[in-house]
Amino acid sequence: MMNCLITCDIDQAQTADAGVCNAAVIVSSPITTSDNCGVASVLNDYNNSTDASDTYPVGTTVITWTVTDITWK
Image 1 (cartoon, rainbow, N blue to C red):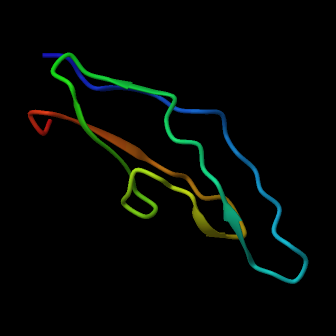
Image 2 (image 1 turned 180 degrees about the vertical axis):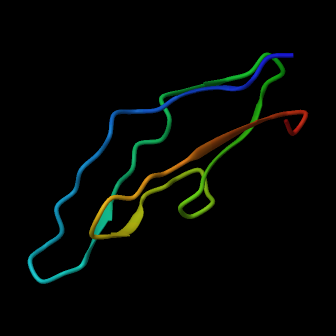
């Protein structure tokens, strides 16, 4: 059995507009995902979708991506 593999893009930085405490950020999806059984899904923990692009508050936000194979492991 092989663990799913994921390669993410570099860290991203975004400046909020003056007087605004958030910013619309386009987040790069993982560059590559793979599994010997096949990948069923790639989701992020910020908005639980395949696209983490969203409105983010000022400060640091860590996004965790989860890759699930076709056997749901």
